Amino acid sequence: MEHLKLYKLSSELSISRDLRMSTTLSAELIQHMREWRHDIHQYPELAYQEQRTSEKVAQQLKQLGLAVYTGLGGTGVVGILQGKRTGSRHIALRADMDALPVAEANTFDYKSRHEGKMHACGHDGHTAILLGAATALAIHPDFAGTVYFIFQPAEEGQAGARSMMEDGLFTRFPIQEIYGLHNWPGLGVGKIAIHSAAVMAGTDSFDITFTGNGGHAAMPDTTHDPILMASHLVTAIQSIVARNTRPVDSGVVSVTHFQAGTGAYNVIPEQVQLRGTMRSLNNKQRHLLRQRLQQLVEHIPQAFGGSATLKLSPGYPPTINHAAQAESCRLVANALVGETNVQWNPEPSMGAEDFAYFLQEKPGAYFWLGNGELSKGGCHGHPLHSAYYDFNDDLLGLGAQFWVNLVKHLCL
Image (cartoon, rainbow, N blue to C red; front, side):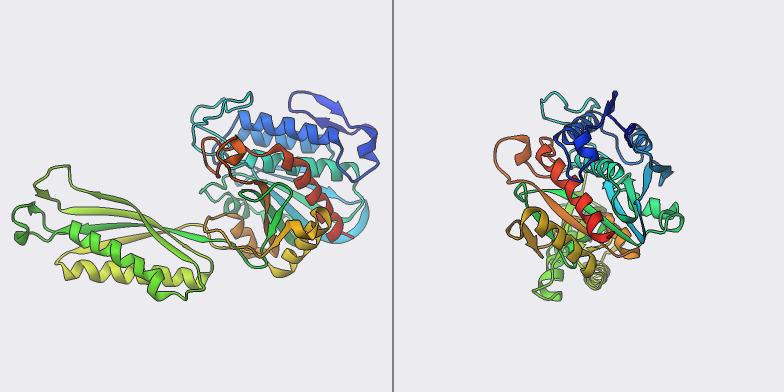
């Protein structure tokens, strides 16, 4: 262990002796995590293009002495660390690595150097946190069992979690439980939010094409107006949640695109295109939203002499924690930040997360780490996916310490 070194993205740096002797993260390691995070932030890579990021991650894990596997799901990386004590527990910790196609508006020194690409969701911070935890645990592996550090590509709408599973993540590695985190703007720094069941919504996208008989706008009686059909459907869609789901259940159906005509004032078009999204927190609700939308699409255009086709594109399933694993996270969080700083079962988010695929296959839990209260000023006061967003470096040590403590809690 005396020869163990940290990779500093640009050079090698020896670990201080105090970190070798303790599970607690040192200021030196936290500073390295900050440097890793800033480096990753400068070179954002989109889904399945995370070549530089995954190479840096793999190199760091190898220098720690971990067994490292690359190329899972395209650019995914898995590092494996055995505890120094005998144990049969096999747990996985996951970080996502991809960026977004957003032009960064920040002006700090480590802003994106890749035009039109940006870490606007904090995945740079998630990656640095998991690297920090892997480093601390590799230096002081006083636990019983095996930890799998999963660095996942393509979370942002491209289902990198599913790709890793299709590439053998759970067949090649005997993972028993899996855990993930996400930084959360609007939740104060030092606070952690954990759900015992639903965390985030499942998503479906829809495309609807209405077909009628176009004609002169001054002679609407000679047409079957698809704009009228589509307008009635937009109104009727609002009834799906309001009149078909229980008031205590959450659901969203939103039309986000309405395209009709060529811009002429006196022409009723032949076709209209609608697009939108549906969100739900359980599979029963998801099925209901799909079913009711299909029924409305079939019948409303017929009432106006036209027709419509619906194309449903399934997105991520609902992210639903397993109760026992969520409780383990709650106990670790209470001990780390104090019970008053832990939100237990707050309102779920109607956003989506492909960690849901992992939780469909393995017990586990996903929690939120507060990135800071939203405000008018500063890059930490903006929402996820904003061109001004930035991960809060104050979370790095807390996030890595949580992972270390969770491993010690689970792998006794």
